Image (cartoon, rainbow, N blue to C red):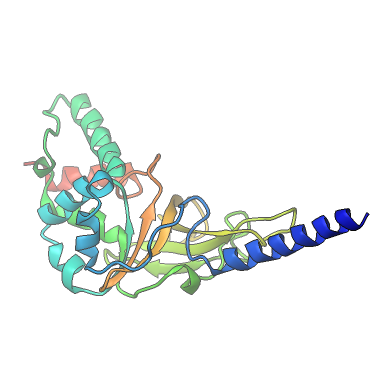
Amino acid sequence: MKRKLNYTLISAFLLLLLMATACQKKYYYDSGLSKSEFNGTVMEYLESNPVIFDTLVQVIKLAGMESYFRDSSLTFFAPADSSIHLTIDYFNANLKGFGQDTIEVLSDVKKEVWGALLKSYMFKSIKGLEDYPQLDLDNKQAFPGEFSRSMGGRVMNIGAVFTDARGIKYQGLRYLNISYVPNEAAPYNSWILGRVATCNIKPRNGMVHVLQYASHYFGFDPGDAWQLARYYGFN
């Protein structure tokens, strides 16, 4: 009985230690751990991770927006290369449907299109996970997150989603979510979600939150992106 009691006390101590440690982490539960501080600019951070951001870096340069990421203070929700490729695939499917030449290189898309899509992920104020209010995607009226305009003028919603733990609501780990709000007149409807995989990466001039790779279209809504590309035309 005494040995059993000792095991119980040790288990309780380890559980408390784990909870205390988890509360100090500033990363999302599906992100793994990485160093939060980066000794360089936002642009240099993206360039230092070519496996994930090589295409994104090319898009930034084609849009002529390097200075934003090197010199300006901003929060950037960084979409991975796979998101850009998904949107290009969407463009190409539509171009084929119209019997037109498909996109072969990134420069086939006008710089204005790349710039407009990039600005959906850019915000002037610098904010980390702890700076955003709680968001419950199933109860937006009670926990609405924060509505904010991106640098491109789009209405976006950003919030910290609290998961459940051991059957207790909102007591689990947190992750960050950014959504495009397509209808300002009905701000709680038809959100297009973009979940963050890794948060609070801190280059010298801002904050970077990296979006999950799977199933996210660059620009959030591929239909809107396609209409924008058709408006400007292709090179």
